[in-house]
Image 1 (cartoon, rainbow, N blue to C red):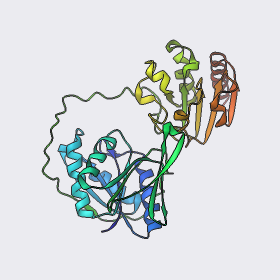
Image 2: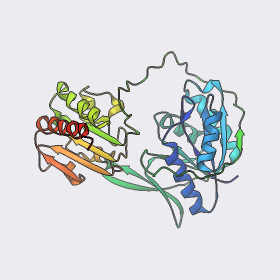
Image 3: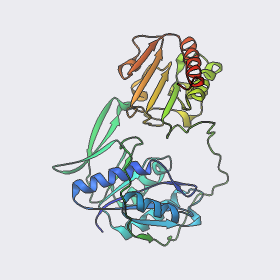
Length: 327
């Protein structure tokens, strides 16, 4: 096969939501190039996930299912991915951006002497072939990259593509034998990020984020209460992460999590360029800020100029009142 191959990601044997986005990108790219497309995944106890992936994308699926791939070790993933690439012989490979792919995919590209562009938000086909676009300078501008190697690879940033619709039908499952794995790292302990209650940030339809305008760590309860009332995920700006008000896994922005919720509440957030880069996929932005000149109002559909300590609690109480009336 010579065509487009995309790697999905799994957690606890199930596909991560972002896999549908990278599948959409692969299907679109393959159609434009007039070539074939196939899928791949790596992990332990993932045969069911492989079958689900084939049905979702309507493609053949190459997978390595081995206990040595859990817990995650970069060396094991590199060796296993190379076995799949050798079997599938693609010209172009797409990956979903995660903390893990950010670590092992560049190493794989170096091993294969492949051209790699990371954190892409689109891939189009020009006269000279595929062109990858990614934000640079903290999200202030977009740069275009052409690929200068026969094997081309790209890591797609979350929220870059609409998730693919169910394609119908399914291809063949190709189980690839795990290669010899020589790893220089031993996992002593896994410490998961604190996830808290409510929807998770990456997949939440509604997100309430706070910034320095909240005033203090003690006032963060305003954000948590609003999120609970709305059934929303919780996020925050880089500044509040650096102050230790929330964990790094909750940071929204160019150097944090890029999201595309239906509604995004920016509370006490000024709207720095790197933060706006993380919410460019949000369908509706609602801003609350006491500075009428705040940059966040440039992207907000609705805005309230005022003290968040007055506005947000009043808003939450009104939401509770309407819900009690089943409005």
